[in-house]
Structures are given as structure tokens and as C-alpha cells.
Length: 361
Image (cartoon, rainbow, N blue to C red; front, side, top):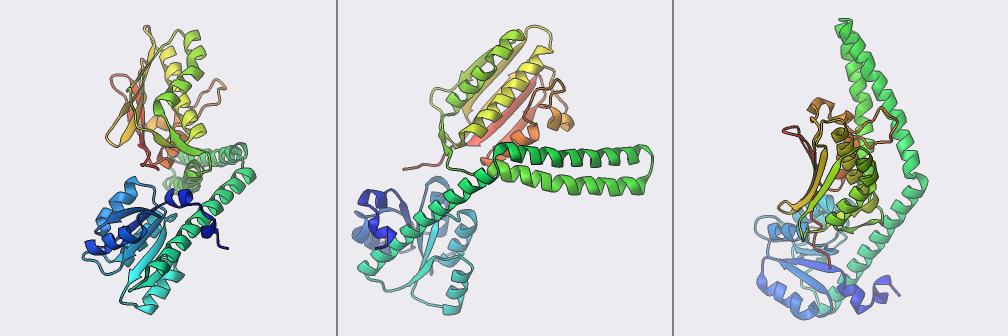
């Protein structure tokens, strides 16, 4: 018995199937035959399909090949790159066998279905596609679990620290050559420094974007409040007043709870440390607000700000505190599909912008 046949009706309907066809009658036929059994979404062209994929969690896409504008195979090829977890099925009445076999071999398609199809065969194919989605999701979960066990955070951090030390020495060598007026040596040293930093940045992004089963929808207001609680004692000891401002109803963000919490705590700790060095009144203001289809979390403090060129050193403490570097904050934020926004005037201000979690159901 296949895995798909073991899925309960509730489990089947928990996964969305997007059907893309420019002929409304064909979409109506799908709805009539399978609407009660499957959780169906419909799109009349490739652009509408991509818009749905951008906001919805979809397990399977079934696309007709011959559509005006973008062909179904071209649409599925794009989805294979941008949303590889989505199982892709092509409907075609004009079987170009070499083209389709090549698409199958390259992983663009899970399968293709020749028209005309029967309701029974299509139902079976849809179950098989859902089975494939479930198997892929489980495989990905096990891969991430194994990766987390083989490379726990502390070992990854140690490896990155060692690589960063190498990069620091390369930059120092370049600076020394520049000061000595040796242009050729300086050029070589700078190239070596860049070659050292590039893989370091790639590793940081890879670690920051590694998804594990701990990714889930998060309330940004609650996350910011928890981060504020973690720095309350430090702020009080330094005579720094911390104020939290959050919209009443914020959209959730989707990500790793620990990584988001560590990022927000780093922002607040840095703000408290900067404000502690400033004249009274000393303050830090943290806010969370909706920003279009995103959530902006902003931390301002009464410190004097920082030069953009020194941004990567902003969260590094010479007093022995284990800080989270701004480069890593940026990597974690970008790993969640967001961005880092820096401002210097009139006070130091750092924002992390996380996209709102897509609709899930």
C-alpha cells in the first residue's frame, strides 16, 4: 500500500494543490471532480500562479503546458528553482517526448500527464504527487536533523571564529603593505583577504539560512518583549531607561525562534551599551510595527551612532562580552528573507525587517 493511500482525508486536505490553466472550463472540471477531496487553488496564467505561490503554502502545482504568454513547462522550471519543495506536474496534449524526458531527468518535473485524462487516473496521480511532497518534506527534515547533530551551533561558531582570524590576518597584511607603499604587495594582500572573506561570508549565510524543524510562525511583539527582558538587568545597572512600543496586532514572521531571539537581544544589548556611554538622559527605544508586507523592529538609543564603515564592529565588545557581530545579525536577518537597515542621525538606529509569514492553513 502506498504512503498516499494511508493519508487520511484530513491529511490530504491539509496540503494545497494549485491548478494552472488558461481555460476556465478546465478549472471547473477539476473543481467538480476533486474539489471535495483535495484543497484546490486555481490560477488562469503563470503570473497569477506565481502570485499565489508567493503568499500561500502549496504542495503540488499542476500546470497546463499550452497557455498564452508563458508555457506551463517554463512556469514549472521557474518553480523548481524558487520553490523546489513544490511537486510539479505538467498537463500536455502535445507530447514532445525528448523535451519532457529531459525535464524529468533535470528534476524540473515530477511527472507529466497526457490529455485527455480520466478522473480516476488523475485522482491517483494527485495522490502520488502528494505522497512525493510528504516524502520530500520528511527527507529534508531528516537531513537538517542530521546536519544539526553533526554540526552543533558551538562547533559551527568555533569554525567561523577560526576562519575570521585568518581573514583578520590577511586584512592586517594588506594594511601593512599599503602603509609601506608597496603597491604590488598590497594588491596581492587585498586579493588574498577578499578570497578569505568570501567563503567566510558564504558560510555565515549558509548557517543563518539553515532551516530546521524549529522554524515556525513567531509573534514579533512577543519576541521583542522577551529580548527586552533579557537585557533589563544590564540596562538598570547602567542607568538606561528602556521603552518598548509595539503595534497591537502585528503579522507573524516565520523563522527559527532561537536565531530571531538572539538577533533581537544583540540589538538591544548593543543599544544599552551605547546609551550607557552617553550623557544623561540615557535611553533605548525598541519598537515593532507593520511595514507593508513585513514587520520592522527598530532599536534607537541615545548614543552618538556609528560610522557605516565601522558597522561590522558595532556589536563587538572589547570588555569580554560574547556579542553577536552585526555581520552575523545581517546574515540571520537575510536568511529569513529580511534586511538590515542602519541610520546614524540624530541617534544610533538599527532596524531589522522581517517579511510577514505567508498564509498557512
